[in-house]
Amino acid sequence: MGLLMTLRIALKALFRNKMRSALTMLGMIIGVAAVIAMVALGNGARSTIESQIRSAGTNLIYVMAGNFMAGGVRMGSGAANTLLVEDAQAIREQVPNIQYLAMGVTTRSQVIAGNQNWNTRVNGTDIELPLIRSWPVEYGAFFTPQDVSSAAKVAVLGSTVRDMLFGEGADPTGQTIRVRNQPFKVVGVMSSKGQGTGGEDQDDAVYVPYTTVQKKLLGITHINNITISAVTANSVATVSDGVTTLLRARHRIYQGDTDDFMVRTLEEMAAMRTEATRTMGALLASIAGVSLIVGGIGIMNIMLVSVTERTREIGLRMSIGARSRDVLMQFLVEAIVLSLIGGAIGIGLGISVSTALTQFLGWPTQISPQAVGLAFGFSALTGVFFGFYPARKAARLDPIEALRYE
Image (tube, rainbow, N blue to C red; front, top):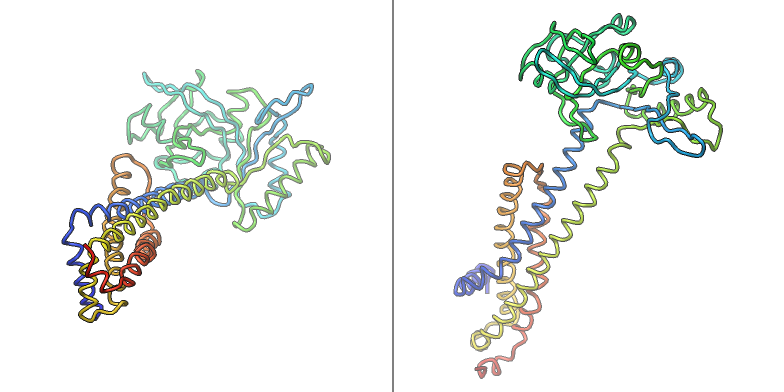
């Protein structure tokens, strides 16, 4: 008997019990849809992290003030005041493969413009920050080297701060804001950057010369951080090691002693989040895969019931010339058809669920063609694996005993 005839007989048998066939496929539908949706969620989360890394800049290295010991008490990250402007200048001069470098001093303050005010970060930085972060201005311009050297009271606003103080989309260049009761002239507005790798709003900040923060807002001589851009991605590790070696020597930190600074690359900062997302995605996909196995067991159960119900039919077919392999093929095709139809419906449902999660809940999803193909292929294999035993049982029936079956 040909494959086409076998398929027609299998479809006719399945459509005789539409409700039972639909319920049998339900496990496969849910399993395939769950696999696609869970993998899409995992891919979407990883894609979001990668886009955040790209938006932060290229080949980045962060040097931050570390901790220090006081009477056996560790004061915590960022507590040390030993990171100096001279350290940054030495790094620029002595560590090779550095493209850009910007010193930073950060504080928070209430920023006032007219009758509006907003509490935000005041980031003291250097002129090379936009180059490090690949971050263009939307209005005006970034401050100049002369502004830094003279500790000028000039400010560049992030788009969130601009929206809160002057209205959405406004151009406030030339306007005056007050930071700790000191007037600052707005010279520019940064283009919208969005969320950073740490989850913070990169647009919710005011950027001023680091010297201004040091001398006119905080009254300090040290800096909080240094942001570095390496020449190439391959030189990030070399630059990081060079910075660590230089700062340990400058700060007279001996072997075995704890650093009073921290050097971090963007990859290190994102690695934990990426790994956690990958693990969670694998866990969700594994749980969804269990649904496929449960669906396969349901198919096997129904096929065994079908063999018992159709014992006389099998005996009659074998008595008029059907071979054991024809019977085996018929029941195997029925199981595979159930799996494939369930898999196809599951793919559509999985894509719909992924789209709905993005549209209605705002969760990032990214449908993977590989996951779709894998889920569909696994559903076919499930039909073969769990359909083989009932099919073999049907093929091994004795025609005479089958005809006597009540």
